[in-house]
Length: 334
Length: 262
Image 1 (cartoon, rainbow over the protein chains, first blue to last red):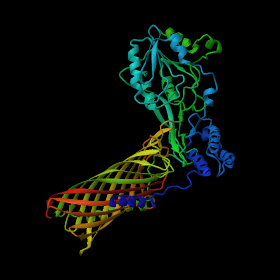
Image 2: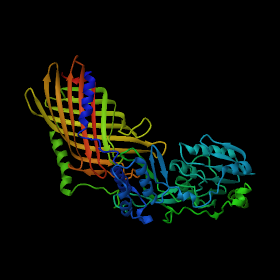
Image 3: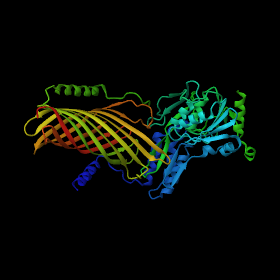
Image 4: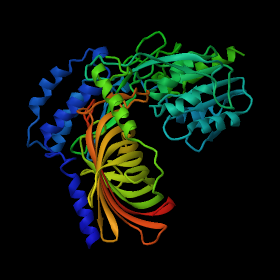
């Protein structure tokens, strides 16, 4: 009893020094906090020519102290959509909001079922979901659906070892919406033949919209004991995003790699996670990634070396024309 | 505004840490210690914080704490080195079992030297203290959607310290108060980015706080002593995003007398 009383008194002693914020569910307070956090952290105001103060003046009048959570969520989501950013998201227990327009600007250009049923032989799946097999004699195929999770490079090694001796390799990152650079970078290293600079990044580091660190150069070089340095075709579509675009950026530097398909999604903002007073979570991109010649890919994406779209006729015939073109181009390199 | 440059005080204020170190050095003598003892203790630590870099909410939690120490007490001086470590799961008003919580792990190393300035039954000491602490927090927001973030803070704080001791019953009651003079702070960068930040030198006014310790020690045997102590630490670091934290420790330790006369 004495111990409990003592413990409670010790907890109470902390309150004057570290106080609990009040009015946590106040819609106005939460809206202001969201706007202020983005004002302080978001990295693309200058690049995208966004007048964030004007958006506050537009949306703040719609927020009232007594409005329902769902209504507040809708106003916040609508305001955030003005950033046109696939990395920005807002989450409450009753709803999730993402900006998906980047992915729907073009046809999907991918259906793995078509690949698996029409083109892939000796298909296998690794523990963390990579799908691999052969699309021709001596030409392997690996689909990487995501760069999320832990130690994905182990799966990539497993797939390369499973494919054995190859003369060509197709690496498919269509519909890969990203994950972690801790996966995409070492996996790109499995295909690198030399060390080269592949991107420049700078972090937002202050309250002004143009407060950034100096540019930092990132390089990609050979990594891992299992590697392939023969001809590689990288397949991309609009849903190739975030860490998958970093992967594509890295592979662009390699002379034995060429890309086929559609432009990538255009998102390399490396978001941070945060929370509002009312418990909603959100993500804010905090850096800008550039190609080695300082071109930003945000909202623009990376165009492939060879643009190919899967037409509606192709879909009706269950054809993946992107895969077919990539295979033909690889076989010409033998 | 490029970050990554060493910021600090004005030339005049840079003299303060040098003067403080000189003062401490003048207080240090090397007498043969009357008593030397090692100490091992366990207990609990309660941490409450608001870190505007991570969240607008107050996070708090209770967890185990470990204490290792060495103390040498001379006729009129006291020297101690103490290592504290602890971990706790911090929760907030919005926490659930799987979301909006932080796993906090903290360690600190303190070196303290005090010299008696007042005699009698109530002995009064003055001196200095250096406390180096590191705190790492894995903040889980929402594993389903936005995931989690890692935050880390390092502080090296030079403090002015004062203490008083009073014999009570079979043991000695002591109270110690320390206040930061100058600090070296290394906080998670502005956007929680992974680039390496540069330590920043901070004077009083930009890193405020205090440490207060109350301890009661008695020696049931010639060799073995028991100490019950409570420590209250508060730190407030206002820039660039404010951090305010309280750590309270309550525990007991066993001291083993290893040399000198008791």
